[in-house]
Image (cartoon, rainbow, N blue to C red; front, side, top):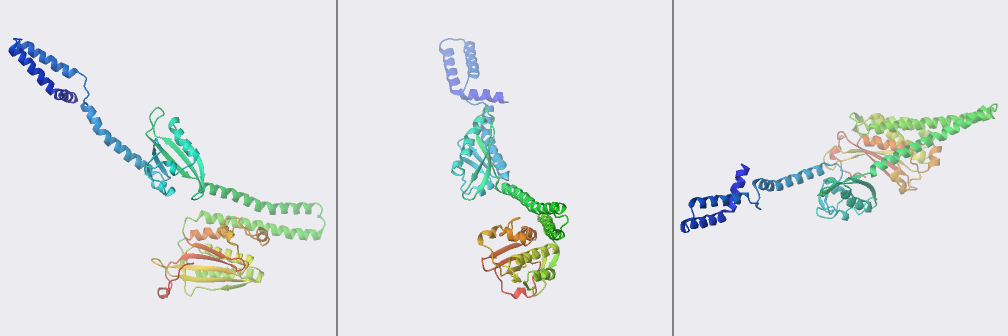
Length: 435
């Protein structure tokens, strides 16, 4: 059918020429005596030449291809856009000149100034990336580079520049895939620091124990006075290692379960009463006063009782250790009315009147093994893990930890949890804003 269509197209294209030749041949037959058979044969020969001659008009197949090309190109653009938008990381499609064709939402979030039609160098100015952008099409293979940014925020990015064509073909477009390595490198650094700090914390008491044991085995073998002193120190070092291992296990459990929110109903008043009884001997040991304020009615939240007890114990123990001798530690409670939906929040604050903490230390207090005063912390039996454990337990309860302190004015550590139900009389209370 396509062949018949092409023949018809050729005849239609040469219609006026065929008509002119037919008139000429008819005139010759009519007035010159040329036989009609010769005239008709000449006309057929001319028609055959018209059909066999090369022509510039498109065939039907070519016309079909031309009609399909815009559709195919449009479908290809739509498919490529869908592929780019499906990437979870930032992805940008460029033309050969480096202008942005389109990009996915992740790229828009990463680069607020990214615009279609703009040149990628206005967004990413790193020389290594721009070199990869020009080299990748020539090499015909993806190139991955890593670069760091300091503004608007410090971050480290890995960029893959992939030409979307074979080496011998003209490159119609370039796909740029980006991956933010900042959080990954921070986690890796935290792991390395954690291993180094844990090893250091264990190495010191182990070295002391080995030294005392060797001394007792050799020079102080028959010295009863030295033996008593060394055994006392050895017991302290062993207790220090025990505390460290216990804290490490607690931190590991807290991190492992942080993604699983607890479902049991717990009354915070019961937790406060239990912690008060448990830390009373510690208060006497530090000659400190513990003042406890309970909630006026049952304060129910969705929580893990043992985890909540550990949170308050850690905060109160820190207040005793760093609040100074003969200090006052207060447990203050408050119910916060909801601003909209929800049941409000319960707030528990552990407040001391100690020396306080400088502002530069506050953002890092919940880091593992971070101490404001390393020497004093070790002397008082601290491991540097207490607040890290508190942070993970509070995160598991979908709560919030707030720290405020000023040098010379004491410190306040506040934990906030969502209420499982509104307490009695709360509907008539005046709403308060969370600090």
